[in-house]
Figure 1 (cartoon, rainbow, N blue to C red):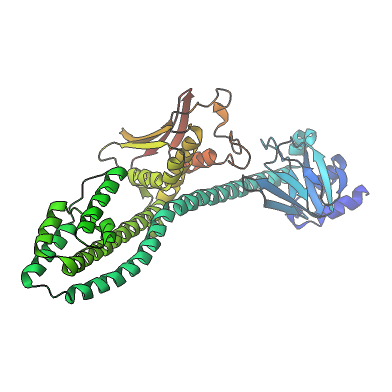
Figure 2 (cartoon, helix red, strand yellow):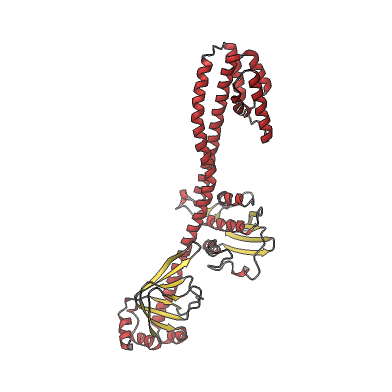
Length: 462
């Protein structure tokens, strides 16, 4: 294509309206007209880019894989400028630059950039603004991706933690429906047994003992099975249904108390009385199980609400470090349990609040604690401390894993750098954590040796 035609095509691009014609002529004179087929890669991920491209027609998209598969995060079309820009420190694109359709470009090699700054000041200034806009767009995309990954971790942990209490609630409710039917039948049997007031008083005394809220002594499974067998044998000797033994064995009742009741009642009267007592104990026990499971669900939901600051989205930038750490530990509890790991928290009394948005700080805590759990071996330990130092709060997250190699340590905060296996890390967590902390005049550092890696976060006191 003739140079004059290329200049006219550049001049027709709205984005270059303010660029003088002599600058466009210089770009065409130093540049190269290129036609790229659809489906190819203009700039591969990580490879050094040496050219600037002005897109005359077509479309280019950037696809970045941050651990969950490639995703289009940015694109350029007619009139856009991409590739290496003057004054840019870009070492390589974070993802492959795909040609989404046949694309025509004017490319200028970076060897011409020093002269470009002198000969084309308007165009150079335009590319500097583009570079800043591009950095902001990538940062916003990185932060959104990391938030989604944190949300995925939160959802996975919450689902695991909610599974047991929710299953217990459903199971307990089903058994309770059956138990209520038995309780009705037991009440009818007792009413038709014809007990005297003295006998009824004896039954009520034993039932009160069985329903006592005082905790029963802790027993091993073997001890509990022996106790149930002992009660079943007593019931058989007195001609009573031995099936009541399972419910009675869960209560504080002793054989001596059963002997006292047997001294007042016998035969069908004793059977009806113990049926009524056992069914009452069973339903009360089931109701207690449901209450404990529902309380666990309530506590988990409350912890997640505090973790995400759902009720304080527009609140002031003041946050409690202690409550944030405790809620985060509760969120990762299932992961720690699955690895047999222990997580301990040591917080200085009366720790002051800090400047920062609680939800964003919790994202920092989640990244650090989750990384520590990934780093340790089975049955390892993560120790978290929070203390005040002058006008700052210092939070330390330490693990007893193998440590970070000295050649890797300086790069742990670099964007897209990760030591985890493909699909298990984005390389964004620590970079975003540092950016979030610096927003509130805080910072993060790391030290590591075999057997101990420690990340330290400093935040300004409110």
